[in-house]
Amino acid sequence: MKKYILLTALLFSSVFSVKAQDGFENILLADVADSQKLLQAYFAPGMEGFINSMNNGWAHTAKVHKTLGFDISIGVSASAIPSERELFNIGALGLTSVSSTSSTASTFGGPNNTTMMTVNTTINGQAVSANFEMPGGVKDDLPLNAVPAPVAQITVGLPWKMDAMVRFVPKLNIGEDDGSVEMLGLGLKKEITSWFGPLEKTPLHVSLLAAYTTMDVNYAIEDQTGDFSVQNAATSFSLNAFTVQALASLNFPIFNVYGGIGYNSGSASYDMTGTFTGTYQTGLPAPNDTVTRQLGVPRNLDFDASGFRTTVGARLSLGFFKIFADYTLQNFNSITAGVAFSFR
Image 1 (cartoon, rainbow, N blue to C red):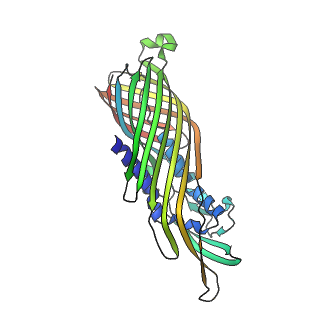
Image 2: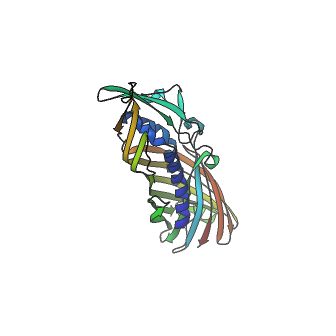
Image 3: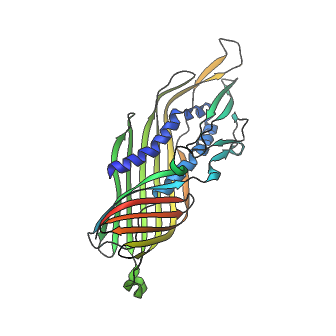
């Protein structure tokens, strides 16, 4: 299970890393306030999609296990980035040091089209300029333009008609650049079918669920020299996601259907560290035609996502082996699918 979660987390984080190697750090040529706005606008759909994905897949039935019964679920959830979030409006950001002949640019979830930007600022009272390209998005790289997250957990039956759920990966190294990933998710499901009297004698089961997940991913940016130099640089993102849901399922011997309504909430932060040095044009004759400066780095870009959710799904039961899939309507609509090995 650890390896599965690691691979899925690596898929998501490696896409960010690819964008790093594509040169998104050149955005730092802008004044710090403007580079903060550009990075925020670029990464927001990816972070919000990941929050939505991490809140999925906690249950594929409202029925709880007998005490000490358990199941192991493995799957994936993918949240589609809405088409209106594939581009951002450059003018709406209120940039003061950056301009472009284009009115829009790709977000992380947009098409793989770069956008030329021009920086006009001052260094020690000298007017200078520089050009950089906003990176394109990963629309063509992610299946269905959807942000993936792992669904891998152990669920154990407790007394009092309750299930405890755990998703856990200790800090593990990823890639060759001292990257790492760690994750912890905890959930609790309480069946309340008995609250409705006669329902206990029917295939219908009702329960309440609450779950929380935290995840941290870190990776390095390759050193580079030239007009834009990078040394000892690294990026990281941290995620916190929380969901509460009311679930119902119709449990038959082979085929089950389930659904639920609830609320998602979550936050993510993105941070970049290292030494970045940029070269600017002065417009003066050589050798005074360029000037360099160490660039400011925006700290702790913050992202939030919250909203109501509705899920419908089905599960095929072949003895202890289960196959499940569901669809969730939320801010970023999601598909979740996987298998479970269940022992009651």
